Amino acid sequence: MSLDEIRTRIARAEGKAGRAPGSVRLIAVSKVQPNERVEAVLDQGHRIFGENRVQEAAGKWPAFRERYDGIELHLIGPLQTNKARQAMELVDAIHSIDRSKLARTVARLAQEIGRCPDLFIQVNTGEEEQKAGVMPDEVDAFVAECRDLDLPIRGLMCIPPVDEEPSLHFALLAKIAARNGLEGLSMGMSGDFETAVALGATHVRVGSAIFGERVKPEG
Ligand SMILES: *Cc1c(COP(=O)(O)O)cnc(C)c1O
Image 1: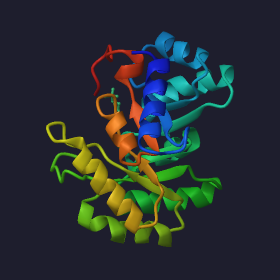
Image 2: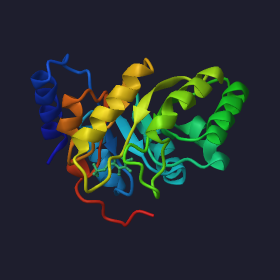
Image 3: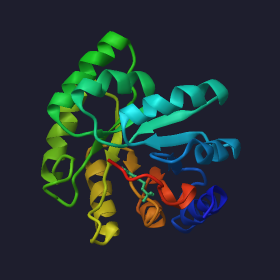
Image 4: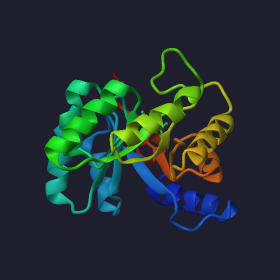
């Protein structure tokens, strides 16, 4: 698939769901992709990208930012507190706020740095033991805690279990967001972004469908 095809499919899904054209932001997930593939997408005019790891993002995006204007970078992978400062200085949004300690660290650093990326709370909608994210029944309290810390929480994010129907998880995330007055919904990947758009996604995170299969293993 190509970037154009993905954009077309998102537009079609927006239309079908009766949503305004352009209401969904496409985050092109460039983790472990070779630079020439990322450049090809930049050269087609795309500017919103997602990375999984702070280290990798720090190694590749400052140079791209010197060459291309208007890049918006999203951290979509897990964040350790000792990498929080580096992440906050590098990215425009963090989708993986998932625990009190991290929330408090980000709040303190935001005071020091004088700015804070847009934040999304990651929700473990499948209640999977090995997966990051706040449990569904703990989200309301965590949102309140983050608001007490004056954090700019824009929405919620989820990664559904691989072997389950994603629409159930997207609908659950949308429901939790609505009752907390949050507008952002970061959900949907290469295999299910149209379903996510139908259920209200504001940000879809699409990697392999744009760039092709990842060439190096993740880790
Ligand atoms: C890798 C990744 C994606 C993109 O996955 P694809 O299936 O390649 O589209 C989306 N979200 C997160 C959190 C990821 O780590």
